[in-house]
Amino acid sequence: MAEIRDEASLVYLRLRRRFSGRRRKAASTPDQGQEAFEPGRDPRGLGRVLDRLAHERGWEPTLEKARLATEWHTIVGDDVAQHTSARLNGTVVEVQCASTAWAANLKLMKSRLLGRITELLPDLKVSDMRFIGPDAPSWKRGIRSVPGRGPRDTYG
View (spheres, rainbow, N blue to C red):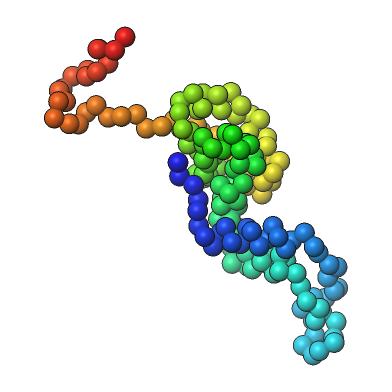
């Protein structure tokens, strides 16, 4: 289950969430004045500073991808999040599921999940979702492998 666990992204999102709630009115010209007590010299909130830094550096798309992975439990709920993880591949959300049963059930909820992602992460451009079950064991390797149909003709 591949999740985005970039420490810098997690710290940024934590600080942004913590400090962006309290916003003061900015001065009409925030970058004006170099001397003490001039207009524009008021301290700025850390959340605004981080938002500006992310915008200037072009980090916003990468941080939105990280936000999808870190807030996945909020989107789908804790029970589903324990059995799944999500990552963004282009505009497609790839959901790695713990079993094929989870993948099949989440396919039925696809439109609801897409709506929830759009609601909670409006800046994230998502066009589709893909559900991936666990990797099946390979019967093609090993000391007892033989060419041909393999184990499919012995089950069932």
